[in-house]
Every structure is written in structure tokens, then in C-alpha cells.
Image 1 (tube, rainbow, N blue to C red):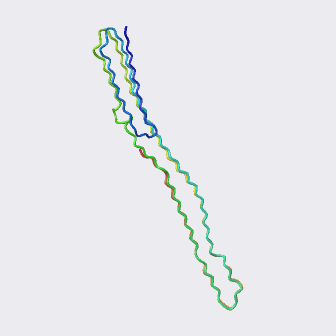
Image 2: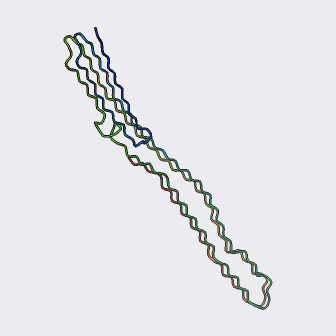
Image 3: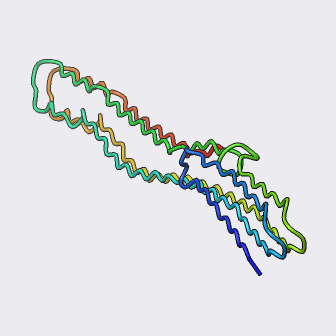
Length: 197
């Protein structure tokens, strides 16, 4: 007895967002065998599609802003007026943290256009009493994973001093003190990452 065994195994993979599709078209013909032939056809079309994306953003910002226009001394003056003008103190801190983005364009499973992986088996024109066994398997697996993480640690210290002026022991005149103002502004913007499929 004459036996014919035909086995087909086709695999296509898309790993880590690879943009190159793999097409698999399998054709098997079992024809023209003699009497009593045994034919076994086992065709497996397998495609695995994996897309994995990950981004991580860590930001550590330490701010120390100090301004001082005070602690002026005008002491011991005689016979004239004393004027102390202290300027303004302004501290401004702007911190912006932007997380990363994931964007994936995943083709239809599997590895290209839908239906691009095909298997055709033809068993014809064999002799009498032939035994033919045909098994066709199409396996498709698709897995898409995206992850985005944004972490921001911001520590700020903003100080301003315009006072603490000394005008002591002045004789025979007027004493004027003008103390400026202190303005502290801190702005923190944190925008996390995004995932798009």
C-alpha cells in the first residue's frame, strides 16, 4: 500500500509593532494516485500578532527661589530727613511635565488584511479504494498591550523679604520707610501619557 503524507505549517508574526505584514496562502493538491493509496494532509496556518508599547516619565523638580531687598540700615543721622525705600521682591516658578504617548495602528488579524491567510486543499482523480484524510487548521492570535506611566515630584520653596529695616537714633529730621511688596507665584502642570489604538 502506498501512502502520501503532506504537512503544511505556516506562521506569521507581528512583534512589537512591526509594520511588515506576512501573507500566507497554502495550496495542496492530492491527485492522480493509484488504487489503494492512503493520503494524509495536515495543514496548519498559524499567525500570531503581538503589539507591546510602554512609556514611563519620571520628573523630579526641586525649586528654591529667594529674594531679599530688606535689612537696610539708616541709623545715627542728624539734621536731615531719612528715607529708606525697599524694592519689590518677585519670584515666579513654572513647571510643566508631559508624559509620553503611545500610538499603534494594528492591522486586522492576522498580519495583514482579513482573509489574507488562506489554505486550499484539492483531493481529486485518485484510484479506487483510496483513503484520504484532510485536516486544515487556522489559528489566529492577537495581543495588544499598552502602558503609560507619569510620575512627577515637585518641591518648591519661595521666599521673599523686604522688611527688617533699621532707622534708629536719627535726630532733627523725619524718617520715612517705604517697604516693597513680595509676590511669589508657583505653577505646576502635569499631563499624563495617553494610549491610542
